[in-house]
Picture 1 (cartoon, rainbow, N blue to C red):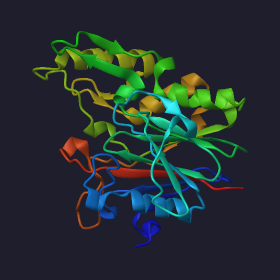
Picture 2 (cartoon, rainbow, N blue to C red; picture 1 turned 180 degrees about the horizontal axis):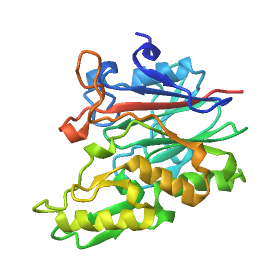
Picture 3 (cartoon, rainbow, N blue to C red; picture 1 turned 120 degrees about the vertical axis):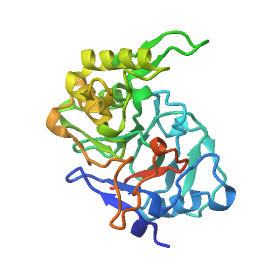
Length: 284
């Protein structure tokens, strides 16, 4: 099976070596970790990386939503070679990874958006899982957890992505960000009348409105949160021009195929399957 035929190719950056592929339900279940051995997608991912002329495949474990962004050396565990052409690195819990020329990265996602950043004229990209916790932190009233409030902007995964370009002395005016997949705002509710979480939801809504703008909350009573708008607001505050930040408009919770079946896997619908976001930087 040609994996490129089962995934959708996206090329949001003009004159860029960055290739992006996304895969939903029809392309399979892309759970990279804790996956049934007989259907583990690693072989398919290695084949996709090889078809993009990559010699290295990076697989950060995004499940903890810890906001960290690492480079290939940060993925210290080199898995046994599953392909004659591609080596696979994993073994690190991180939301994001720097992808150099000749390398690819794969992230398995449910409803959390993925952000890909690239700077004009550069031969690397940064890709990261950007869920609610990675962007704004946790808000909780749970016993034993205590009162939790939002994180500072400089602790967000977006700030850590931007820091990768600053360290390499890239002008932020040249940085572009692409937001792919992720749940749509109308589907991501945090009700103010929820019997258990109304306090936490209320604090989250107030935090987002104060720090990132009222437009990020589509309906205050229902607490419908647009993570795409939060990401765009954070990028702007960190110095990336607003015109350089775009999203694909996909909604993992509601998008459907022509036959009315759901297009993407979605946590919000109680599904365990994962979608694929695959990023490759072609060698020069």
